[in-house]
Image (cartoon, rainbow, N blue to C red; front, side):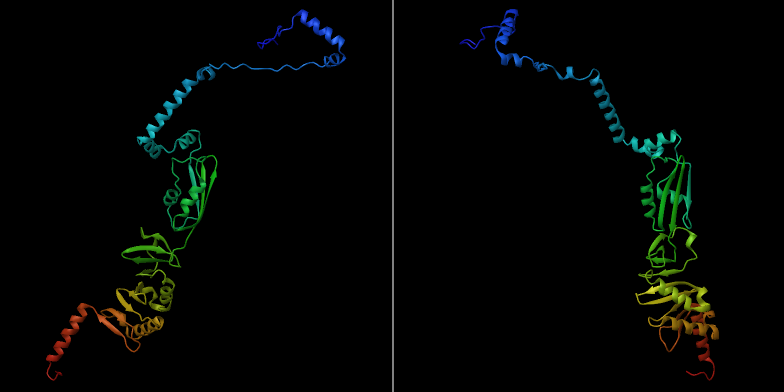
Length: 320
């Protein structure tokens, strides 16, 4: 290398330089030994610094990006306009539509364990209709929806390909009706509300009325059982002031005491057997006092009794 940093000879070996190298190898044993091992050349890839992004992407990529963007905008506009919701409400989800076209629509639903519910109520609760499809029905979601129905205690949902759904459920047993603030609900034996009174399916159940009357249902049913021959005539029981019961018998109110109501009922059974007190023109029987029975006449009976008493006073010799 000269003073300017340049090599005095070419870096590419010519024939003369190659001959000189061979002569030096012949005179130097160490160089002759090293020349037996071939040298490894490095492969270097040259990168053009000025290559644009368009040159690096495959041909047609831009068209694909534009097409996808337009499709995304179209879908977003379809959803935002409300037309997608209308389509789903009318035809079902797109996946369900595709599955129905492929032959996997729901054609039959088998319901086991149904007792007091109607089939349409079970299907509506599970979210299954003609728009559903077997492959895309979420059985876990359908079961959770069924379990939200108070009347259903247990439920399971299974798919049976290609077109069937099987629902198995266990319903809670209704024990009575509970009326509060003018609203009537169906309750279980423990007083839990399990359904609303919507039709006459539960019309034959016992009826309790008033605040916390549902929680006192076992007490009321025990009183009905203690009524003996009068049990069939008891139409309802009203829980009064959270302390005592008033029973409704064929339009007659039987007011029971807070203490020993069963004993008071036993007195009424004896009175009815011996004197037919409930056959008279009365609207109420008050048994709250242990030493007497107080009856309340109907308005007509009370007026007739008052008139009779007045006439008796006018008779000669009647006490004044």
